Length: 257
Image (tube, rainbow, N blue to C red; front, top):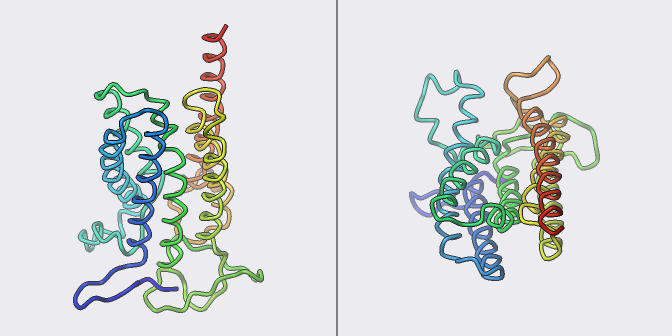
């Protein structure tokens, strides 16, 4: 693939970082559009998005570093080189969720309505981010002999060279695009605030847990030699999401009675 998008003199634009940036921009624009449609101040969503971006980058990188701290012991500066790959979504999701909750509480915004505004943006941002991941070769899959297997040959790729692999980055990208499509088409027919967000949580958790089976990169410690940490978190997301959909749905029914 193409880890480097373009060289401009001494400036190098990495494909991974480019797609992440585009993902954030598209996500913010969609969130502002939804905020305006629902009568929420777009400027508040813009400010919230900025804090979420910073939290997501810090959290996702920190989670990755913690999965293999020995890798960064020899050269701690590698921690800051995110253009080389190594962002774990769960870490970014957790830290940005905490940040968002604090911001929403301080600005006295409607928490679940705000979450619904952001949910489709998260999904489309992930879709674009995974394309960057594919270009860099990180989060690569296990070897396979399927017709759609991908063989990385660029010397700067993070994936093993010269062997056919599951294109797990594209699996993730298509999964996120599917989630976005469902959320975007359903957003005007939701029954209660929080429904879109928790549907996202359930769908992403399920997709991630399944696709982990095909990942070939280092997954950190496993639970009972069966489940990776990402699968455990994904399963927890599914359970939590279903529980919250039931709770919020029943609360809406009681309020309407």
